[in-house]
Length: 243
Ligand SMILES: O=P(O)(O)OC[C@H]1O[C@H](O[C@H]2O[C@H](CO)[C@@H](O)[C@H](O)[C@H]2O)[C@H](O)[C@@H](O)[C@@H]1O
Image (cartoon, rainbow, N blue to C red; front, side, top):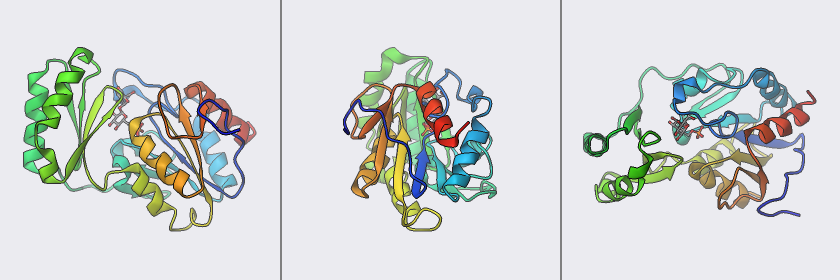
């Protein structure tokens, strides 16, 4: 049975697997710099990648260079909510587009209004983190909605203790659709595992493509199946890898 709480079935050899990083492969922490894969998970991911003939990608909101420091270089790594795909062994670009000045100034001004928040710059994507100032969530959301960023082609996406200002194309659903058009992903069934709002975009696309979608943790979702937490994701992947 598919449904909001059902455990996912095992993958098939002809699947294409897309994995979110924070909150899915690694637990959330106060400081994003301290988050790494648990011991042994790099081998698990590489093994599954081989089983799927390379059709495994880490699909993350992190900057591609940041992501590349945290997951095996032999895998596909797609950073910046899908804007920057890195093929196996590819190096992150040294330069990438920046957000328009108007967007940057607006986000920095709003962050300065709320003590404890900070801005993370990821090329054209800007994240306003408020994990250290959770009581301001609603006010920050209102300030961002009033900032007129849509005039710059930007939209705000609310994630876990973070508001992300993203151009239209920074979207995991679009990224998944693009990846599914080329080898080694094309012709396979997409499988997406993720925990946050940005992953819901990828769930929608994977569902539309006849894929399998797995939400990690509690909360509303369009995903068909659910795993309880990061540990359950690890157990699921280890079983697939046979380790
Ligand atoms: O798409 P993901 O791989 O899940 O990345 C989403 C965001 O992850 C990071 O922020 C989140 O994780 C942090 C570390 O656990 C946590 O402190 C923060 O509150 C979370 O929002 C990362 O910093 C962002 O750039 C990513 O977009």
